[in-house]
Length: 290
Image (cartoon, rainbow, N blue to C red; front, top):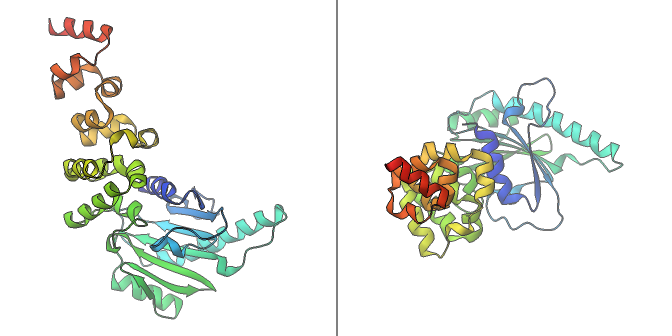
């Protein structure tokens, strides 16, 4: 799994009304662009964010480490180097467009990893020459060359609306997974965008997620499956989650179209399927059974 574009997709669904989320931003000769996201403000006025994303500035360079990668002591130095290069390119673009250059305080650097330990925090403090300011569980910041440098431990964050994209791609204890499921299932907008991702990344909670969503009136028909399938593909969903959840989520007809008739029959059986088949599919089934 390439976690960087997945996280960008999940974050985009949450912030796209206020920020443009870009991936693979060119950062010169450094082979760092695979980890870098750029968020640029696209609207004026206040944003609705109450959690970590309320600290986003006009421009934000984010280095995201997936759940299989650890925070590395040399990464803060490299993020600063990359951030300065990105900022220079953005201001050059501003000048070409006849727009004023952005000030230093309008840029922020974000380093996001699965867990942030005391050794890594000490490294950042030595580099910046002053202590990290704790903003919330799993979230710290420190001034950096008249900009803000944020450090985020995704598994250490409190589960709230802002942190949902991070918790979706983080390996966590079952209690924290349940908090995530409750957060998503209880809010229609989050359910629409993230319901399928819960099924994919937190399979052990599948039935519980369905029950939570049903209890709050959220149904699969409201879920944005098209965007989800564009990212992961139906076959990948099938391989990781299984056919039964696919049938529950998409319906028998869609499952047959994507997975094939025989695969669905082998998992679900024939009684419920027969009524959903086209005449051509019924004839093919009869021939197969004979």
